[in-house]
Length: 329
Image (cartoon, rainbow, N blue to C red; front, top):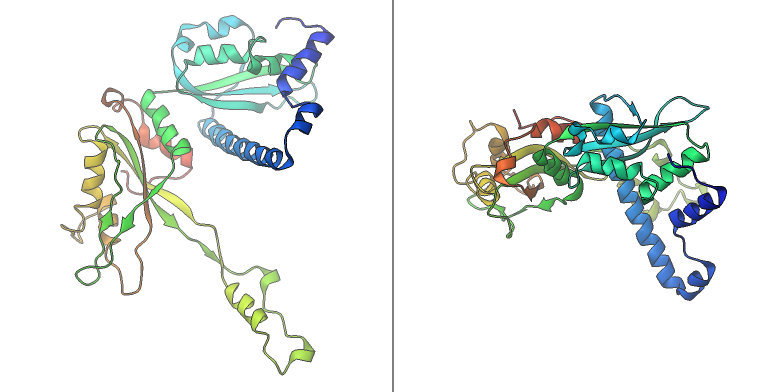
């Protein structure tokens, strides 16, 4: 890496942080400043969650770290035009274990070009690494990567960047049968789609939430507020989460056609012999009086038809979410 003077380091440090000056802060109203801080903290938290998810994927496939030695590493043919999930790591003179500095899915820019940016001191990403090596914060810098197809990159985008859409249902008709009401705007194009359901886990109450005896001075009276609070805490309910259960590939049909076949045809041609995702969705339409069906969600992303046959999409998503898809064989 290129040598830098102490003065250069100071300049780089100021460029990296990009914090507002005292004068700039004074010019920002307190309310706007607070909103800005909250917005930035929320965005940073989201970035951390995505990076943690990418690190988990890299760790799950047990890739070996490669020591960065020269620029020729990234000029090799097998890196020049590939898409990949990659990680940048480092160790120190005091601890040989390699730790992650950064992880990313390079789905738009070829891996070789993206890695060169991380080891180029003229780029913001590379400046951070250069400074820490020059200041002996780090000893060596490493990288690892997993090559992915365009369809796998879009599959990971589906998981990490696209929100779930809840599927509404009608009131029971014909006794105890409800119908799904698909939202508008589902593309008439090929792509990937996922179906999930809301899971609510109940757990026993925590020890500190056990029923406490009434105050001796209140034995003859009922503390309604206390009883109400204790009753509501008899069972704690975990925050709901959406469980992936199926990944669909709309290659022959469009996304709209595939989802219509899953959700609209089921209630009209229901059969107890059906298995898989169609059986699950159909059986969910049969409800007992006063009981709502399980909440169902979808998400989808458009992908060019030519790319959909490449890669191992189900395994890719299963690695990303950390559990098997129930209805994908």
